[in-house]
Image (cartoon, rainbow, N blue to C red; front, side):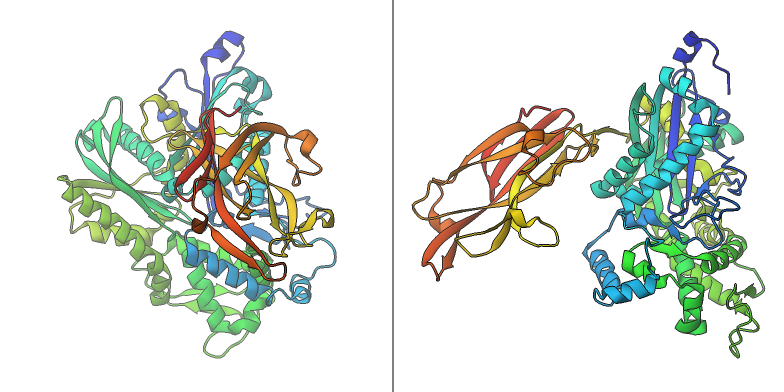
Length: 625
């Protein structure tokens, strides 16, 4: 990179950072272009992650809360792990739960792991005497702490991230996400909050211009087209040509198709909708683990994976020393496996099973995987990848075009077996599968490219942060485990104990606000009244601007600011429309109305309203922000 010796030259530069937090590996790349263009060779992916990190183009998305050894003082993230570390893996997939069945599966798994909330079993399974090796943290908190380590390393060793430069240079940060996450605010919000708390924010870059989101597939598509155009010449892709981009990673596989509208400057028009599934390479690993567990039995398998109960109890995926060693060996075999491999695969089980003998299954700690079995592991994922790709090719044809190329990128995209299966399918379509030398880093390089050319790049989402906490005070069903006894009141209408005046923060400081849709939140609120009561009421929207908002109105009132007060009136609604509640002991009849408090933040415009069913009772669209 050019040196920055004069203030004037620094001011002319831009710093564009790409962050690709992945299920198995994380990539960071950057460039310091002059203006809105940059040669691809000037986009630098981080390849030196420290002497103990194996120094690949990416760093493992792994963190451990185990104590490092006194001798080596391991960093406990990436590849720099103590031998006995319990590692948190695949946390990215925990940032989003796709559907109700996945939520139920997660709940059932946790109940199984805790033996239906048997605390003694939890203590026994995790060997707890003091602090556990697994964290009592949410996936967002784990990702935040992992990305903090990533940022601290970059800040220490990458000269273009120096404090002097960051104070004086205009900066853009581009974060990549799976295609399906564009429909999941929860996942994008968790990723944004984690990245900004970790240091990828205005706090670290005072001249930060934009934080941008782009799908992993779109970033890879832009990079692939530019790379092949530069290396193979302008004739490899022509205007109006159509292609499919498949980003096959560790957790998710995303596929998107494009038509080349213009080559200079490059303009791509998306065809149809991107598609994606959770069928990345880690699911091959899961098939291998299931097969191995059946092969050697639960008793022996638990010696390899003594933390299997911990995974269920915490809902986090974890790996200990033996399983980590075994999976490292399996991954090495997986990465070179081909359709015509021609021989069975032999692997040694690590200690304490290095001498295990099971007739016909394990010979002195050695297991054998037939080529047929290995193909079965792969085909669980490969069949879905091929299905995604062919779905896009059919759609291109229905749209009147002809697909000419399929670009395959991502870590799983380097698999010879996957490439062979896709290539066999493409032969019937007469479609090319070009080879990209930099396919593993295509996503993060493409993220930087999109940031450099942001004015000409479609489908970028601009991100900003909610500047304050906004919430309301409600009564909640009382539980001694969660609420103070001093807040306990018993309702005269139904004899139910409530914790009065608890704060519900509907919008939180630091929440993601996207350029394409407002940040919306709703909270139900039940109000009760008798036949003769006045049916008017008020709901106060409170604002809090510091880090940790109060949980109770009682001890937080002096810290809160009133953002607005909404006044509602239910008088013109017939009583029979409300829920009638009988209290036979006191011979009382009351009515309940289920109200909805809605808040919407669009840019700096904050709106709040109260609804009963589909009737808006009150609104304020000019709240102090």
